[in-house]
Amino acid sequence: MRRILNPGINLESSRRALELASRSLPVYAGVGIHPNEHVQLGRETLRELRSLASETDVVAIGEIGLDYYRKTTPPSDQHRRFREQLDLAAELELPVIVHCRNAHADAIGIISAWQESGGTKVNAGVFHSFSGEEAHAEIAIELGFYLGITGPVTFPKAESLRKIVAQMPEDRLLIETDAPFLAPEPRRGTRNEPAYVRWVAKKIAEVREVTTDTIAQASSENANRLFAWDD
Image (cartoon, rainbow, N blue to C red; front, side, top):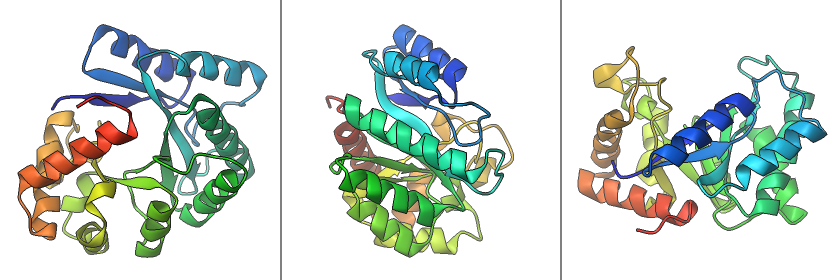
């Protein structure tokens, strides 16, 4: 482990992520409003997000996106909030961390419209803890996104995800934790933590028939490129 990116899900957690990043050199922050948060993204909230995102230790806008699994926030509100934060990311030239659950078609549609109107196309961001179908993966990559792979790739029933991981371009792969959730199979059901990415890397290497070191190096290089980290 060389660097940790800790994303926010609301203003308070974004502030805490930035505070931690300012005290811990290998830790960086993302700031954003998660689709499940009961927050009105009005002028004041957007102004504070812009202020937080302008800090040196912030390297991404997120987690942002769509979530139709829980729908604690109406989809129409999620759409508006997603687009406004995509616009903020383009304004500040930051990549986005996209949370997307049961909503890939709509998320891709919003991102496509955003890019057509001037949004970021190169190193646009990452589909965090990717859970979509093969077609979604292909389109996301075409739109300039990386795919974040987390603990579920190790789960016995995740054959469709492993197929995507086996076939996707190496230069679009990122290894993530989603801590404290989605601990990989050897620790499934426990609190996830960054050290557990080794099991994710091991499974990815297995399905791609390469070494774990190859996957670790590729993920590190991709993260360096996406988040503008020096090697």
